[in-house]
Length: 119
Image: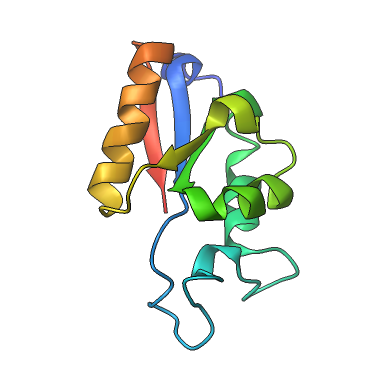
């Protein structure tokens, strides 16, 4: 765990939305890129989680995704507190909207939070 004073307020947000078109034909709406295993036995979502874990406690890692991906994310990230840290986008409106939604959740939860966003 990092020891800098600001890390006590640090939260990470993993953006796990998208239409699944960037890596077509591998990714599709039903199988977006973040749920694919491209470079290892772990998915892109899982490798992002793995990179964050040495730096941030699991209760401070949030994930934002469309409703239809939530079961897949909960399955792939069993350490993620699905009831508090898995945020459903009401409608896909892009990264800025997803980041704004996460910021609203964090403002209520920890007003002094510092938020780092991870694609």
